[in-house]
Length: 163
Image 1 (spheres, one colour):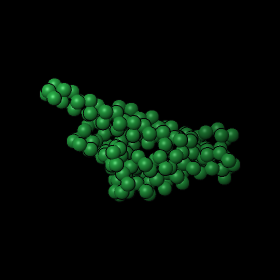
Image 2 (cartoon, helix red, strand yellow):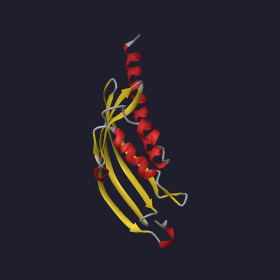
Image 3 (cartoon, helix red, strand yellow):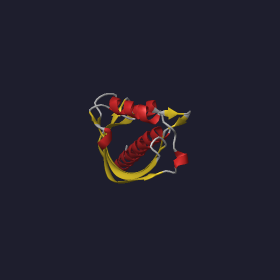
Image 4 (cartoon, helix red, strand yellow):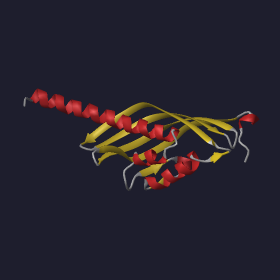
């Protein structure tokens, strides 16, 4: 095989890896908004993920944050979800470090409706992620989030769910 073809194959493999990592992060956010704890958990390595989500907690494995996610996301009152989230990820910077390892930075636009508290929160922040290939698929081995700013406003009284 010629050097040109080998170089082209390496470039294509790198592009495919970057796209697979982007798809992983998008799947993660869709699982958050879709209230899917199993899909959420599957985005992380099986054991030992470093997770730091600020006020939600800091963990050395993804299981505790997946439990918190399930408790919050699946909470219902009067047959309705209490928390409604919208995650939009922007500006990915993916750096491949070698076979099966990578780093990424993302900007998050976040909106949450809390029907129990009667509030709407708009927030933005930055993710600092690390990725590894596990069982042939990219997964997050680190996900650290730093909030840049947040604003919470009251919803009209009729938008609340009674306790």
